[in-house]
Length: 411
Image (cartoon, rainbow, N blue to C red; front, side, top):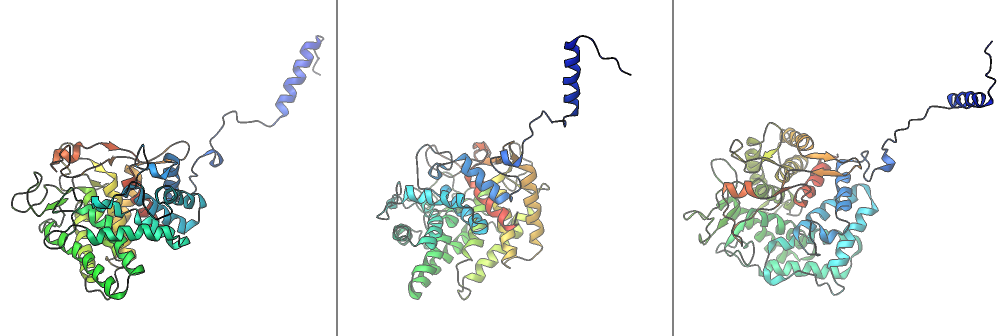
């Protein structure tokens, strides 16, 4: 028999230790749970990125790391992607975020804050896609007036001798791959929705012409890749004196064009003679980009020079290419074997570019922050220029396409 100590202090200590030993053991480490995360890892990648963007930029007018509200293509790109997430899952937080942009940027009379039509900047058309989504939900007249203004810009946009839209007023006689995506899907949807048959046909013809001219001037017949810009006047320092073309095949530039091809087909009627041509262009485009897909599944900043010093695997173009391939197959425009290339791209993007913070916030890394041609300071379109531009995480020109790409894989 155990003898109890005579000292009462020792006795009390034994009783306390016994009681502690009878209690269930508790983990003293506080583990992170889904309830403590800002973004749940149980959600699909598309919604996780959308909610991560909302967390990073609580004010949608400040997307793209801006200090002041502005009407711009980057806002429209991300918000259009978010609208597709909302249509899938009905998350009201996402809807509120999209509406917040319109509330702050479109006045009761339909005028658009910070937008100036006389700049004739094709980039400014892109946010019209998000406004179209809102108009379809609530039919607010100010949204229709705002879209009318964007349509009017397209009607008055300066053109090359063949009818190609200048990229901006400050870039005369220049067609960039970017501009086709910024303007044509919106303009096609506008024509389909609001115009009578005669006027609609005129707009569709103009839209198809833009693709025809890019194919005529920007496509390299040997590689099938597309040069970033073409200057009809051949006056720009970046332009070849004989062809007017810029020097390199820039990943995101080609990414914009691919998304334009698959998205404009959503609105171009089956009986329009240009529809089959655009599908043909898309097939040629797909054949070209998969030939330059890296073994990782992603693509390089300068597409055709993977081994050159300074080149790097780049996220925004990779997301755009993957989206284009996946949607092209889903819609029946591309042969089914291209889905495998898209799947390889999706897996490669997750492995190469995506990181997740402890709080569940999703990050897209290795994004080219910006690239263009001409301007001040002057951008010469050289290889050194494209690899020398700033690289950052969570650029909206990548997060928007990432969301749309993930939706294509229902992930």
